[in-house]
Image (tube, rainbow, N blue to C red):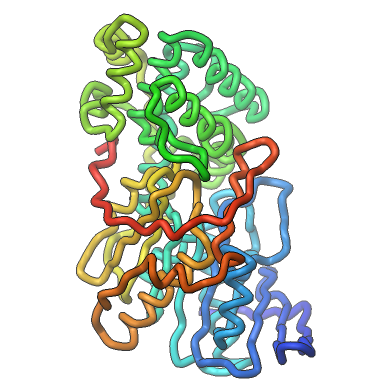
Length: 435
């Protein structure tokens, strides 16, 4: 699994206060970092990071949240993470190669763990599930991953752009993007223009509904009730997460890696997608406020020219972005109900040895360090006992101090940071709009 091992750099740096030993280096060009506490409990947590845009290369992430990292080390967990040979964009192929190599290196050069858990956030959540299907891990913790897979996610964003292109910006490229920066500007302008009229807001509500983008983005506020505010909050997701992935550099990265366009809407009936959408009622209410119905616009979408996929690109993205649903170890997933990746994604990854957890909160990956630790504890209990324990998750999260329950809403200006109450809720995801 390792292939050729190249250690360009190897350092041992004991941290005086904690007895922490840090290993850094490279394996076949992939930078890694390993942190081992002096009282190691025998479990290795292998963390997979989320999507990095081109030009963004942060320090190697060891955990989803710094507070969680510190607590995990205090509890005796060893932490390991790789930045992969190519960390930017859709880095799943690189992670599937470089993360197992790091786990093998740890077992040989540090110590053989009693158990290894793959975990990660966002794209790293999807990566961790795919690692757990292809390699032997003891458990998987997937935070806020689009677990229905990258092909569906790509189609989801194409649907969003298709409606925007049909009604607001005919020059918007929803596939085969030639100028990412200019295309992003066109998309954001289309979203902003849509918000200026009641009819525009109704059409934007339709675009987000068929794409499964939630009408809730304010992390520290309840889900909006008023139609206009709900549409405006969905537009926040369009301008932030969807912008690059749907119309800009993220889209270009996937098409470059895949060797073509992996998305399509040939044969798609947007009437059916609206009927399946959890936001159908919001769309109807928005059209009522505009003094019309969605029938005319749905007819226009039915008549609009379709986008065909390149079959080899679809096969590539399926291979390097779609879980197969056959986990080799217990899996815990954690999603916020207002996550723009679509909470319905999690419903596609279910089974006897999968426990799906949800927090009633808006935003992408908006769970606290406390909630993520509780999810890990649940997984650890399942691994140790062979059974999923019955537990009051909110009570367990409340036992952590306020520093473990801080969240920053980065969609506001300035970013709004607050301590939040534990938000675990029972939820049964509905169908994803795109079959």
